[in-house]
Length: 178
Figure: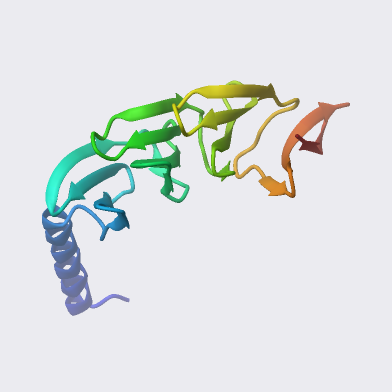
């Protein structure tokens, strides 16, 4: 049984946490050259500063699920999931999305130094995205249905991913090689 003192302590801590979140709504930032990017509490927003001055704030569709990866000069790439996941390529100087694709959830992506590979669950395809201009340079249909926490990995020069294909009322795990 919880004592009155323990209940009072719990509520005091809850109030203190709420006050802290109101005054510090962003988690300590990550440096990308001269830029510092902060992830909002709740992982649904970004804030960018340069030399301590606020440049921009951006609300994300979904929660951050991937690392925030620096790509090219002055850009970051990231993926979100939950509540409408998207895949982003964002210009650090302006905060503008060079690319914003509603993928239905981007839990992971692969990066080869020039191109990002990301699963588009809505279109059931593997997308190849150029970091140079934010264009989708290729889209490869994936047979079967994609599930959350899909496996996507690279070995040597090949990309592997998994999906499930229904046969005779049963789902069969399939691995695809690109």
